[in-house]
Image (cartoon, rainbow, N blue to C red; front, side):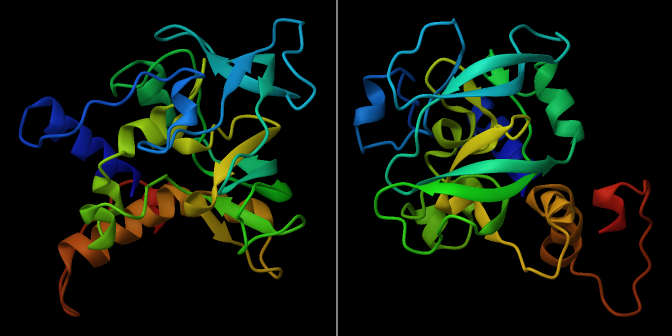
Length: 239
């Protein structure tokens, strides 16, 4: 889950894992397909760059340790494989605060929030599994094609840095930047939400629930008679 990605990044920093350097994130690099980058989000400067840009509000952090500020921003329309979602709710994770204080290597300025959920308003070219009106939750991004993704380890995706911390002028946290009124998200990040489940309860699946449950089922593998201690009763501990 989310902490798997952060642990992977620390291994890269220590030189234990080799990773391709991410491409410089700017408007020209978004035209390449060698390394897919999330759609852009920018501070709103009062001047529209094009009729297709959408004006939204988001909580942005521009400097280390800065408080979240609700500001007007510009959001690109969804590109191929992406959807535009009106955000219903977003969980507040400890990881958001860790990144805000730069204890995790996240480019600033950034819009955080990675336990988002909402309703799809628009789909980009080539999207077939989702349509406007669908209820979805968000998770982290991965390419789906590299060796790590093909072998069931999407947290080790070779493009995980650019997909989860990229953007045009403002980095899009875990490819969703869900502390906002709207978000453009790649279909790889999406989790269909059942109609009989309150949508706002889907958000923690994107981080807290998969982190807590994954630590038990995928890492500890306790036997039926094993005893474990769980400290803390947030989404991670409860899961």
